[in-house]
Amino acid sequence: MDPTIPCKICSDKSAGVHYGVASCEACKSFFKRCNQKPPEGNKCRKPGYCTIVPARRNNCAECRYIKCLAVGMSINNIKTGRYSAKQLEESRREVEKLQRQRELEKNGFYANHTLKNEDIEKIVKTLVEKRSVIKKTFNPQLERFAIPFKVNRQNHHRPMRERLTASWKFRKPEVFKTIVFQVTQDIPGFSSLTQEDQNELIKVNRVDFRMIYSLVKVEDSGKYLLFNDKIVCAVEDVRKTEHLSEEVVERIRNVRKKLDALQLTDEERVVLSGLTLTHTDRSMKVEDRVSIEKIQNTLLQCLEYCVGKQYDSTQKGKRVAKLLTVLADLRTCSDDLIQSKHNLLFKYPDVDFPPSIREMWYSDLQEAYDMDKIRSELQNIDLDFVSENSSPEMSTASDLIDLGPDLETFLFDTTIFPDDIDTVFK
Image 1: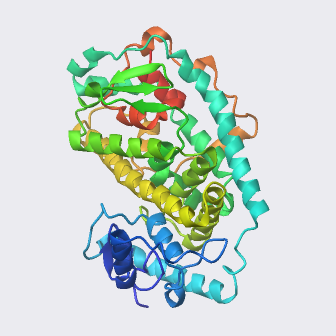
Image 2: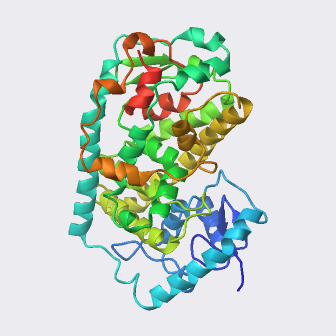
Image 3: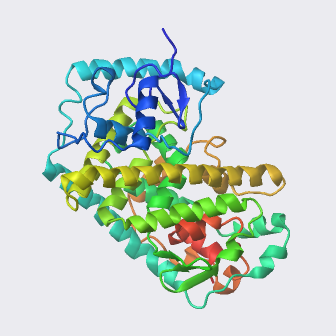
């Protein structure tokens, strides 16, 4: 069997890693042309998302470009070269999945996958309602720490080892796991994946998900960051982080501004959040890539439908492309943030990081989420599970404010989860 890794866009044999994604020469050249001049002349003639395969990849330029963005291609990730040993090790399994995919295609598997508008409406409505419930549950937790607010500047002069130990003393990342598990149950087809695939997708894409599934309004005036019109911190304090360069900080802020400029609707936000969980390129362990691609196609149809409700046919493609481009930029930022956590782990090996923190941070080093335990717990609780016991006393929280380890908390609104609120606000 030829172990060549398939192109992430059309499933043909890839020629290497181009623009951050394994792709064939045809798709690499196509994406390069699109960045020089977007494919505005060829609009999709179908209401749904066209399947891009070698024999038909030239049929719909708009959907092909959207697929390039959806799998993570970005002009900022110009990366051409040979495959790593891990990629080659993965390729044989992926080729087997590709053969299965083509067999399913011959049998009409994808031909019948175009969703009706009423089905899309139901999917999106369910996702929006779930986010609304979560928001109502956790926003009061944020308000508890909103007045007064100030940054504990003394933390900048404390040894990082001491700051790290204090910063995670009261964290409860299992709350985030519960939330993301609740959300994935409403993504069509996600719960049908094997437990191992669900665990792996959540682990490797968790940062991207948190970035998009933002519940707090963030404003960046240049000097200050304003959260929910009440909570303020100085940008200069954010720049004092030890483990991130100023270049990375500014890149993250720029992506945050791009997100704000898009003025995402609730429908766009929940669908994009779901899409972040369908990226498989960060993991060798994901098995059922065919089913995951089907889930991704479903969500892309939902995204195009939601955008089509606000924009005419001439503007819809541009809007979808902008959304997916920002998604690619977010992936770069999330890689930076994850790498910063790795750097802290190896720089301070003597710090006793809680197992739950290690699990959340180091997707390539830790065991899978214990989702079975979470599932059993959810049988007897609902989203109103946050109690007073999930937060430390105000006097204790005042000692835990640290912009270093919690940079993404400020820039990407992970504050909505109690484990982060406790360590950042007072």
